Length: 116
Image 1 (spheres, rainbow, N blue to C red):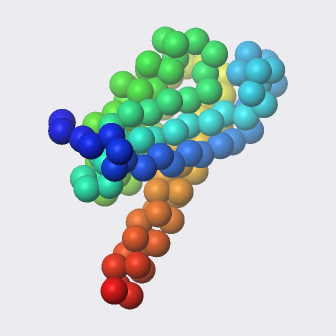
Image 2 (spheres, rainbow, N blue to C red):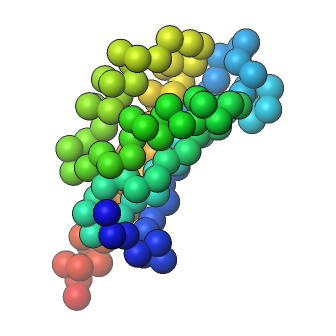
Image 3 (cartoon, one colour):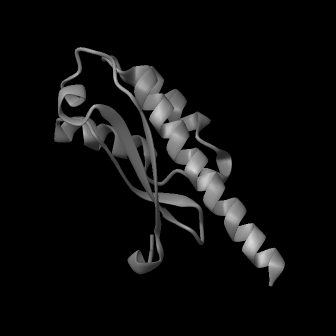
């Protein structure tokens, strides 16, 4: 995948974490970020506010390479099928929120293109 890193965009989403998660004590909220190639709408990198690198890598393995033209239902289904821990709903909510930010970006981009 040939991506110009100076051209990517970054969209983030947040949600409340349940009591009992270590990440809640550190961050207060769950944050998920997508680095996206705006030419292809594919996620080229991802991160989240999990405490451990392994959990962060797990989310990344599900999200990276996904084409956002297809929405986020498929990676959410993969995540829900494979993740067994506290905060599942919060993580899904943060993924949806990040996707909504991407949709806002796309609508602004289309509006700018239409006005030219």
